[in-house]
Length: 81
Ligand SMILES: [Zn+2]
Image (cartoon, rainbow, N blue to C red; front, side, top):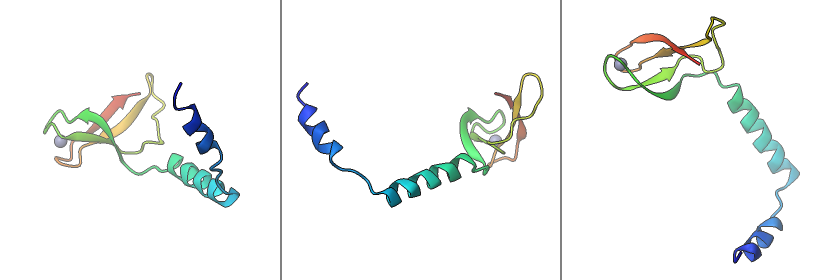
């Protein structure tokens, strides 16, 4: 492979412990972020993208479901996980 040399160079670029800690904290925070997130599903009413209302919360039904809502037309419903 011709880009082996490049990879060796990259390896020498270590990040500081403080940087690494900051990154870990940031991703831990994002994992716990329960704010609405677009989920790539089309709204059945207005065809805009639906949002997961509480991405971290799964309803314990069978099968499990998540709350979804549409920010445009205020449609709300559920989707199976
Ligand atoms: Zn809609």
